[in-house]
Image (cartoon, rainbow, N blue to C red; front, side, top):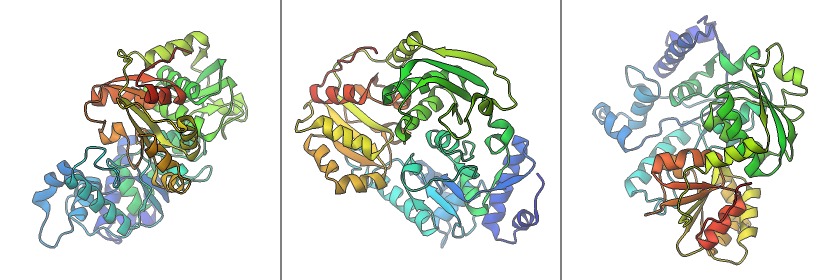
Length: 432
Ligand code: F3S
């Protein structure tokens, strides 16, 4: 890695021990990746100093009298440092992504007072150090919107793919260590999607069946990720209603069945005015067709795990629901109550929840027997209602993960399919 004067000063310890350890970690990381330099980043999304019971216990022997335990966790875990340093205030636009617990509805999630206390303590530490506590996988819905071309350092695969593809900003899928180190140094290795040559498309997907509603966008994303894995798909054809929340579902799905961090949709996304712009100097490695057969196969793949039609859990909000989605659910519920055999959990960010509260949506969901939760989700928080066996989901990403994480059956369908399941306690949706 070639370091400039500012970076060398950090590595020499002239900005303190924590910055030195942070830059040393990023140098090791950059060298492992084959990067030659850093890019400057001010927009960083991570989970600095977050701690669960295991992390706290693991580092307990290192807590020395007078040492802040979160300085210990940040230094030794986040920065992989060799000593405990006092962590300075973070400059720039750093935000905290989702956590594992809703501080208001922690009992609903089955959390313990101890885990609530841990979550609140690490959140307070991050806040005191200048991190914005957004606690969501959709920071772009909660006020963090980088500009086109801006270098960022973001964790969370669904946010990364949105950042690159929809906003045209630039980030790789970073980890806890690199984002925490970037928060102190404002640096991240210049590799992968920070570089022009890696942002061109690799595979073409011709969409030959109409893709317009959210469920269809999720299925198309799941198909795209499954086909291209970690490459860059370019999509053309019958793609309609290309709004923010459809991209949210497409990208999250593509990053689950594959490792898609960037996609282009010709005439839709910012780096794909034309097919030629999207592919640039690269040649198409492979062409895939997405027609009625592929759509049906994708639906079957997502529903391979559903057996019993007796649904006892409906989970919505992966990625975290937009206000518009909450509004739609409230309208679908109307004055009705959900089945006594079913639970309805809807996840969103604190920012969206605050607006939903003001508009009476949180209360309307509660009256119907459901709950609007924040900060986490069933997969990340590893939380489902006690005894739940069969879930209904409108997110391809959550359908991909939840059965594996929690050992339950899952059905995938439209939001209306899921609300119908919540009201009746039965899955009654047919393939598209
Ligand atoms: Fe978000 Fe959980 Fe899905 S934190 S993207 S809702 S897996």
